[in-house]
Image (cartoon, rainbow, N blue to C red):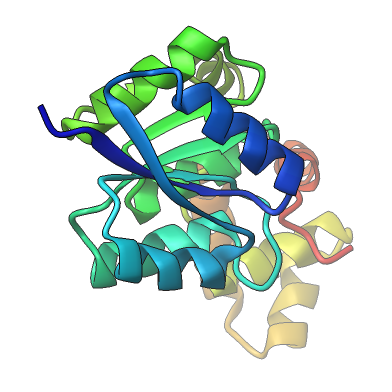
Length: 206
């Protein structure tokens, strides 16, 4: 039986070594290489053609989300498994949307990580229990347009609809419509609640 070829992408050498040692304990897995940032990951995935890329989210030059999106275009046969300590539902959701089919936290047990690689290699979606709970407790926000984020930022700074209309040079009715849609998308009952959610989710410039 052919082994599952795995590439490890993480900006910390100690983590890469530890993961290689761990995954190497499985007779079904062969670690064929490692990468230290997103650009290196894309380059080596093209060169080595692994079955699975174990991808960290936070890396220099190109993060795991951007690298995942690029690999979906250039090497769609490579399955992406996100492995991260960065417990942000937003970033995990973005990585899944970019094309990753699995996600586990680095706090997961050794057996779970190996099992995740085996499932992802088959094209099966795998989210660890911790990731599922994170997405349930802190669901990612729906997409907001650049204009909606701009208006939300103004709302958070306490501007009235009329002031936003003047500042952005759009009609008052357009501002009211955008604010209504923003509240609906955020599931907020008021402008104050919308601003609070946006602040917590780090959507604002302020």
